[in-house]
Image (tube, rainbow, N blue to C red; front, side, top):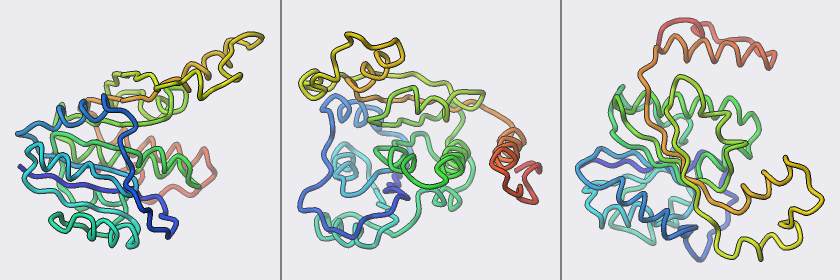
Length: 239
């Protein structure tokens, strides 16, 4: 069984954290490790210092390569897990190394959340999602583990490219964490919806649809026009 882990294209801040980035919910951990049960070919996108690769290795993934944009993070993780392989790379560009329909499953834990905080996040997201779609096998699945609600995430996932199922996991002590802001009194419907999103973590289970890459290229062309950028020369060519 083959597994590739790609840790974030976001910029690491140069600090070495004394602890790893832990699972934000035991239920999320169980869901992801169950989805990655052998035999599947696996590609993982993570953010920062995470033990997910080690956990999946214990679950039966025979070979895991960890990739992060930051050499600082990679050096730290090599010290923590010398039995695993690590490389410095960019998750947004990493998919270019692989042939079409290579993987059965991709798990993204925090990478997309971090990219949405970046400058030009729209183009980065498009490149990342198009790349993940291409390297997934037909009916392959993308699992996105996120702290962000559907009001922000679905605009990047809806359409003819993915079938999307949303799994909500209520945060422990959500009402306490939100405090007075969590009280719906005197709030309009939109504010109430936002508060409800903040009470949960989310898993977006995206199943790949078979789609012409002419459509994906045309989408990129429209995105460039919308943002007043010069479209690439091959924007309307079949990939």
